[in-house]
Length: 90
Image 1 (cartoon, rainbow, N blue to C red):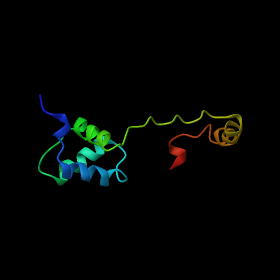
Image 2: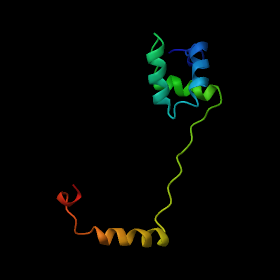
Image 3: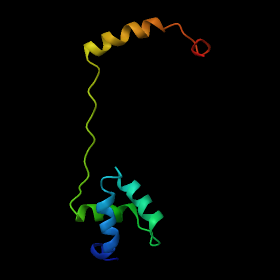
Protein backbone atom coordinates (compact mmCIF):
# COMPACT_ATOMS: atom_id res chain seq x y z
CA UNK A 1 0.00 0.00 0.00
CA UNK A 2 1.16 3.51 -0.78
CA UNK A 3 1.97 5.98 1.96
CA UNK A 4 -0.95 8.35 1.43
CA UNK A 5 0.46 11.12 3.60
CA UNK A 6 3.39 11.71 1.23
CA UNK A 7 1.73 10.67 -2.02
CA UNK A 8 0.68 14.20 -3.05
CA UNK A 9 3.85 16.18 -3.89
CA UNK A 10 4.35 19.52 -2.17
CA UNK A 11 3.98 21.53 -5.38
CA UNK A 12 0.60 19.89 -6.01
CA UNK A 13 -0.41 20.67 -2.44
CA UNK A 14 0.45 24.32 -3.09
CA UNK A 15 -1.59 24.18 -6.29
CA UNK A 16 -4.56 22.85 -4.31
CA UNK A 17 -4.39 25.92 -2.08
CA UNK A 18 -4.48 28.18 -5.13
CA UNK A 19 -7.32 26.20 -6.71
CA UNK A 20 -9.47 26.49 -3.60
CA UNK A 21 -11.13 29.71 -4.72
CA UNK A 22 -11.35 28.72 -8.39
CA UNK A 23 -12.97 25.30 -8.22
CA UNK A 24 -15.97 24.11 -6.27
CA UNK A 25 -15.30 20.37 -6.20
CA UNK A 26 -12.43 17.94 -5.76
CA UNK A 27 -13.31 16.50 -9.18
CA UNK A 28 -12.79 19.90 -10.84
CA UNK A 29 -9.51 20.37 -8.95
CA UNK A 30 -8.34 16.92 -10.08
CA UNK A 31 -9.11 17.70 -13.72
CA UNK A 32 -7.22 20.97 -13.44
CA UNK A 33 -4.19 19.37 -11.78
CA UNK A 34 -4.09 16.52 -14.31
CA UNK A 35 -4.11 19.01 -17.21
CA UNK A 36 -1.32 21.12 -15.73
CA UNK A 37 1.09 18.48 -14.48
CA UNK A 38 2.51 15.25 -15.92
CA UNK A 39 1.86 13.10 -12.84
CA UNK A 40 -1.84 12.11 -12.76
CA UNK A 41 -3.56 12.05 -9.38
CA UNK A 42 -6.90 10.58 -8.33
CA UNK A 43 -9.88 12.45 -6.90
CA UNK A 44 -9.35 10.68 -3.57
CA UNK A 45 -5.76 11.93 -3.45
CA UNK A 46 -6.93 15.49 -4.08
CA UNK A 47 -9.59 15.13 -1.36
CA UNK A 48 -6.92 13.97 1.09
CA UNK A 49 -4.75 16.92 0.03
CA UNK A 50 -7.61 19.34 0.66
CA UNK A 51 -8.21 17.69 4.03
CA UNK A 52 -4.54 17.91 5.01
CA UNK A 53 -4.46 21.66 4.36
CA UNK A 54 -7.66 22.23 6.32
CA UNK A 55 -10.23 22.48 3.54
CA UNK A 56 -13.09 20.22 4.49
CA UNK A 57 -16.11 19.39 2.37
CA UNK A 58 -19.48 20.93 3.10
CA UNK A 59 -23.02 19.77 2.55
CA UNK A 60 -25.04 21.93 0.18
CA UNK A 61 -27.94 23.59 1.96
CA UNK A 62 -31.42 22.69 0.82
CA UNK A 63 -33.48 25.31 -0.96
CA UNK A 64 -36.64 26.34 0.84
CA UNK A 65 -39.93 24.98 -0.46
CA UNK A 66 -42.34 27.31 -2.21
CA UNK A 67 -44.19 29.45 0.28
CA UNK A 68 -47.73 30.79 -0.15
CA UNK A 69 -46.52 34.18 -1.40
CA UNK A 70 -44.40 32.63 -4.19
CA UNK A 71 -47.22 30.29 -5.21
CA UNK A 72 -49.61 33.26 -5.49
CA UNK A 73 -47.08 35.17 -7.61
CA UNK A 74 -46.72 32.25 -10.02
CA UNK A 75 -50.43 31.48 -10.46
CA UNK A 76 -51.33 34.34 -12.86
CA UNK A 77 -48.42 33.37 -15.13
CA UNK A 78 -49.37 29.69 -15.03
CA UNK A 79 -53.02 30.42 -15.79
CA UNK A 80 -52.16 32.86 -18.61
CA UNK A 81 -50.01 30.31 -20.44
CA UNK A 82 -51.87 27.15 -19.42
CA UNK A 83 -53.23 26.45 -22.92
CA UNK A 84 -50.04 27.26 -24.82
CA UNK A 85 -48.40 24.63 -27.01
CA UNK A 86 -44.82 24.39 -28.26
CA UNK A 87 -45.92 26.01 -31.52
CA UNK A 88 -47.35 29.03 -29.69
CA UNK A 89 -44.01 29.81 -28.07
CA UNK A 90 -42.17 30.27 -31.40
